[in-house]
Image (cartoon, rainbow, N blue to C red; front, side):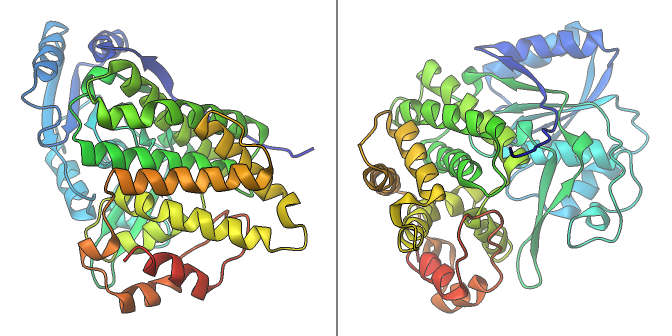
Length: 392
């Protein structure tokens, strides 16, 4: 029997216009002044923004607004924290995509610690996060990273000597996540596609992870079922609230699953490549998902166990969940999974690495720095290189 420990999950509020219940919740908790972090345009200026800020005012809650966009640079986080020095805010609310949620999570923590956020990043800084933070509430406007359910915030410095690392502590999990599909219906098709494939990557990698357990298995399978039914509709019929809601749940479940089972080589590559060029995290994961999954399955099937390999049974299970039907054998279901992923990547025009300035030589070099994380088979540098170059 495999033993496991599960991190706490945030409170979950789900449904159309559920964000309008957030002012009541924080008022009941004695919160009177907040830092409100959003994207530049996905929420501010919309009718939902007007309703939400009106509700805050009715509850007597003052807010200080900041915008975040692109990858979270440590300088930008430090700047927001410095701006809030002396403001005595009681909580942080973030409404936006994964970058925005990570910014809010980081700010809520850094308001309770001294120094720069760089000092506390894994593999970069020399200090250990204390776990102290202000109450933090996460409201995603995309369905991808699952940051609304995780205990880490990803911070990047892009370019030579760059990094993409996490500020992490078990106590950094949000107090509550508000999944409101009405906030996601306006998400552009390209972002919807890339972020959706990120969530699907997380669900698959968590399910086949060497760190998987019965709890994360159940969440990952259910998330893949949600995604299989709703992902295409979120792109082709973006105003479909039911589809948007189901995909939001899939992303949320992916966050809990990855936080407790770990991820794989695709996210290892995303960390390395995301520090080299300005490329959206969802695009990296989405563009590599088909090639990496296919290569891993090929290598596993060539082992002594062949198609009876336990990891292949898990890939087959992921295929059944995502496709919504059993293709028959383990091999057939693995191939059905790979075919589905390649089809979506092509149909929804996920960009290639070369579109963001990567060269073949850069990718060859980067392959040696990619972590396998909890990938269920060992890939050597040449194999990783082939995966990356195939999406140049």
